[in-house]
Length: 247
Image 1 (tube, rainbow, N blue to C red):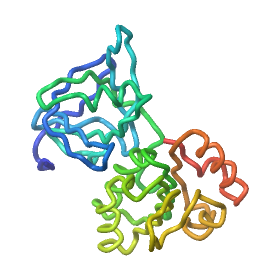
Image 2 (image 1 turned 180 degrees about the horizontal axis):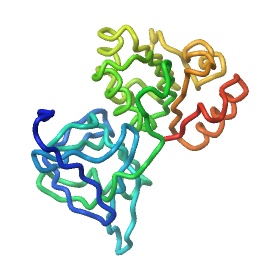
Image 3 (image 1 turned 90 degrees about the vertical axis):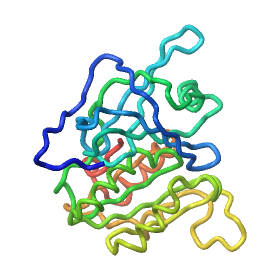
């Protein structure tokens, strides 16, 4: 819920691991879920869109932590969401997927990430691979919900159609917001697929991102090999290093 501006809102940020109660679980894809955690009714996370929390867990007797960016709209009170894909090799992602409603999870933060600040650009590109979309969800939601004067261009790469996180939201945004553009890339497309196939190429970047300019910035997130390759490609296409943000 969004609270009235007349009410006092507490902004939550902790340096030490703090327990948060899991209140709802939403299945997004075959291996991705959104976990909703409870905050006091008049409290919100003290963060900018794109900042992140650390999830702390003890697994096989070892204490570990991993960063996760809340996917919920910045400023909502009473809860926050984490959207997490389960990886067979990811100890914390498996830990989160094993939680049940009513369980508590230790987290610290929010911490400063590659975030959005209102007014930083008029044209914003997002290049995401798989769960690299999660740091971008809250940024896109923030800009569209608050009717910020910016045009958004999303390139979203996945292995299969069933891996597309929040696909209905992207389709709805493209229909409802003239300033939102989305292009999907699949490694293994189904018959009749109308998006791009294979991997993100320089041609896809040129055709579906805003051109380099002083009022343009790009967010890039995904598997490290993809990010390394595309960061180099984007620079070769003329985007300055300071315009490429890695959440």
